[in-house]
Amino acid sequence: MLHVTPVSAFRDNYIWIIQPGPATRQVVIVDPGDAAPVIEAIEERGWVPTAILLTHHHFDHVGGVLDLVSRYPVPVYGPDNSAIKGVTHVARSGDRVHLDELGLTFEVDAIPGHTLDHIYYYGHGALFCGDTLFSAGCGRLFEGTAQQMQASLARLRDMPDATRVYCAHEYTQSNLQFASAVEPDNPAIDDYIEFATRLRVQHMPTLPSHMALEKKVNPFLRWDHPDVRQAAMRHASAELSDDASVFAALRSWKDEF
Image (tube, rainbow, N blue to C red):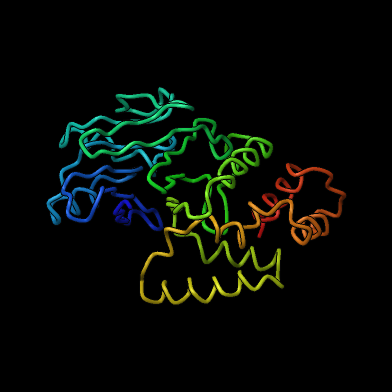
């Protein structure tokens, strides 16, 4: 199992640092929006960067890349988007990122919706999904359509239940408030609210989540559950005949929640 450490950035971002094991000094950096906290963690812990993985072009995910590579000249894997500065290896759907120094391999797939260039990295039981999937939530539709996002989330939902989900933001508590409004009688949501509250009181991250939990509590993975469909139709005051329209109604509801 990977050893993954969160580095906090900005107000609620997590930059993930991947090690094959806790005793390994070589690390992979995921979505470094800010170089300063990453450099501080590297120097404090004696880590040796070997690669950077990027999920999409938003500044809070890529803003630290150039400063980091000027200090640590490592390969940078990212989506096919010329707006992202510093990418040395374009990672496209169906690719595999082989990090031979660490003995790690990650599968890449496109998951448009939040942005059109969004990709994920999956390997060793871990999913690095940027801003597409959050615990109990999902990203806003800044560039893609509801149909694209629902299809992307469907692919993530098909991953094994044990998959550890490394999202890029600490949004769990606010997402759970919305999930509870959608499914007020879902006991799994109530239990997760209590658990997340205990963690945050101790200033601990609620992440990673895991896919089995998300399938129980995340309304954006539960578009085909009867209670979620009914809640979406009641809120939209409309008949919703397909999964994408249910998802679109949920996303619109959350945007104004």
